[in-house]
Amino acid sequence: MDLEIAHLIVDLFEGRIPLRRNAIKLYPVSGRKGLLLETIKKIPRGKVTTYRALGTLLKMHPRAVGGYIASNPFPLIIPCHRVVKSDLTLGGYSYGQLIKGNLLLREGVDIDIETGRISPSDVLEYEDLLKIVPLRVLV
Image (cartoon, rainbow, N blue to C red; front, side):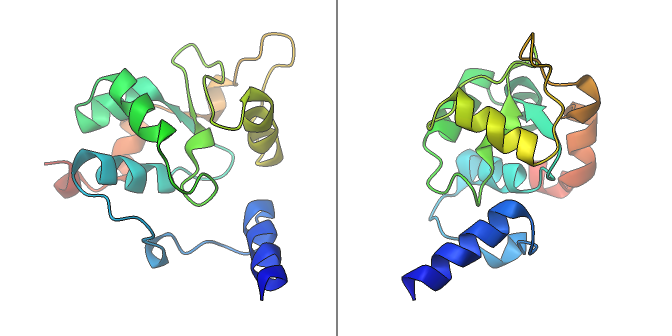
């Protein structure tokens, strides 16, 4: 059983099977934090967004966004590694920047090796987030 679960997690991580985002509600979180985590789940593989864009979307300070993300109970299921700093550098990650960078590279995010910056073409800005999060949820 444990080995089966491990294989499932690896398959999800590698993108071999799709994660039905609405099928997983593993955390009893409501309010702004719950909405933030649900929004992060909608960021597709190969894309990132910024703490600032999420803060603007959810009417939160970017540091509050970072604080909530730091307490993410399921880092691969709720892909907080897809949230980066506004200057498009990686920012923090509970398992370290090296792992965050590797996760993003494996997902197809373009990171400049010399500067450590994400390609702007891989970034979902505030306007892009509005397209993936229903407006009625934000009101």
